[in-house]
Amino acid sequence: MSRHRGSRTGRLLAAGLAALFLLAGLVLGVASPASAHSEVVRSDPPPGGTVPVGRADITLWYGERINLSSSSFVLRTPEGLRVTGEIAGVEGDEVVRLTVPPLDRGTYVLEWHTLSMVDGHSTSGVLVFGVGMFPASVDASTGSRPDLTLLTWFDLGATLLALGALSVGGSVLARAGDPGERMRARVRSSARLAVLATVYAGVLTPLLKTWQWGMPLGIWLDQTLSTLAATSWGWLWSLREVALVVAAVAVWRWGSRGADRPQARRAALVALSSAVVLRAFAGHSGTLPGVTVPAALLGAAHVIAAGVWAGGLVILAARVLPRRREPTVEAVPMAPVWRAYSARAAAASTVLLATGLYQTGRYVPGMSELVDTRYGLAVSGKVVLVLLALGLAGLNTLAVNPGVAATVRERVGGRLDRVARGRGFARRVRVEAWVLVVSVLLAGILTSLPTARERAEATRPTIPHVVNVDGLFVTFEAIPAGASTRLETKIRPVTMPQPAPLAGVDVILTGPSGTSTIPLTQVESGTFSGRTAGLTPGRWSAEVHVRRSGVLDAVTLSAWTVTSPTVADVTPLRVATSGLALFLVAVLLLGVRRFRRRSGDAQDGRDADSDDRTLEEIAS
Image (cartoon, rainbow, N blue to C red; front, side, top):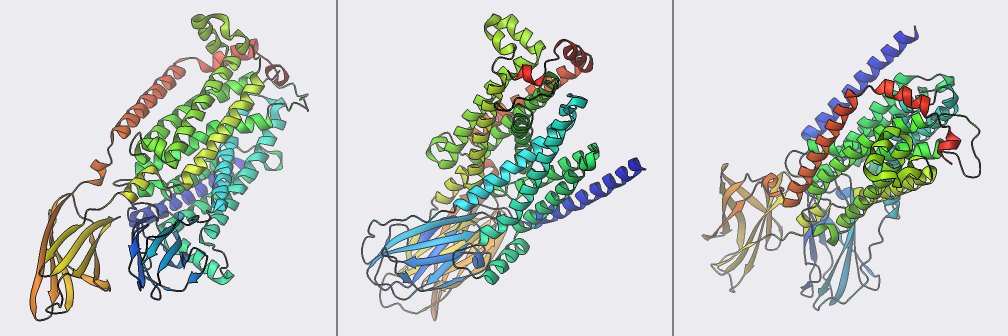
């Protein structure tokens, strides 16, 4: 009866997860590719620029569609005096225009806080400019949101602990036999707390992303619901929360009422892994050009591998190793437990390194960005910590695997005999765990920061086409904006008086995909804007027709080459890191093949008979 009930529960869970991924696929199918976090690509006036006295408009161009209702813009003087104004823009657009009273001479600071409609990241920044003078040096601090970074750490840490507890709570701790039941109970309780923490963090995340100081409760909740319902990030995050709830229910059933239910543990592991995959699609992978599914899946594999290695080690160190002030009295043979964990940790660390190298090549344009950007410095620090943890893990492997210790002894002699005998094992395990905890903190920073690639894209200057024709100074730009291209034209009279007023601007685009005419809309005096589909790679030309009442159009012609974003994204660093990643995958596959060839069960039995050290002995 229980087997029938378990199989029925498994079928229901499989059907539910299939429906979850189908809905996620629909969300991903309709979501357009992103470009960068909601960072300001350019502005008018530019940072540190100067405009004439009486200027009454400010324009910001973002690298990604923003949620205007959940964003704020405050213009003030250096002394803190606020300047009232109105925000003009279209919800889900990349352009925001602020209309303010005519500005007097002085320095002004525009503080902005935006929420992306694509990946849900919130960003803040300032724009300092001068009116009638060069801007004075002012404090441009924006008051960063440490609460979001702390919540990211909390969420990521709880996810890794839950993955670690679920990964070691099965066959790894089963090696301890009946005397290890108390340990397994402690690990199950840790898994429950960790999964509940991830559910809690998932609820708080959209609330904090849309929260601003002084916001009324009703508006705050409306903006949160709008973000969850009207953005691709919101849909993916909601699906992730559903998967986490499924994982929480399964974890609660695992070991409830003293009965160990392996199917519930496996179901929780599948649901939690699904939540990790959904978060990967809602994160940095959406900002990459071209096909983003492999990047998201490999990013999810990176987190899952970190959970198996780092999360599993922290769980074992906290729940299995004896405390210094409270030595255990349980006579539990621990060598088989650590031996079983070390095999999984070796595979997980290899996957972690391979996927980490791949992500470095995708998100860091070159070697200089590894030391010149905060994202690159965090990546470099994380690599150093992971390599240090791998060294400690190698020493710990000698203490629990006599076969490996014998092989090492044949090559390096007896220099590591004290390590192989277990001296300092518990101390090294704790140090390795703390090193991995610090690396997880750096990983939390990485998920909160725009990638180095996004920074480079956001700060890459566009080349405007400038021409003087019929007494008009015409500037034309074609700016890539995700799945579309934004067309901007500025017209300034050079000679006065003009023969006729402006009546409109049309742009005729000709390229590999054909010819199309795009009428531009006047957004402010002398500035016209429009949008077209993303331009295919190849040679393009644009005829800008400036229409004037009663006279011939003023026509300018410009040409440029559009490169494939996928081809442009292949950098030497990406080629090198991808090659190293493939090499590590090959090493892992060869290791797995060699491991399978060995008679694992018989070897484990002989090792268990000859190496039956207890928890007190191996941790002494």
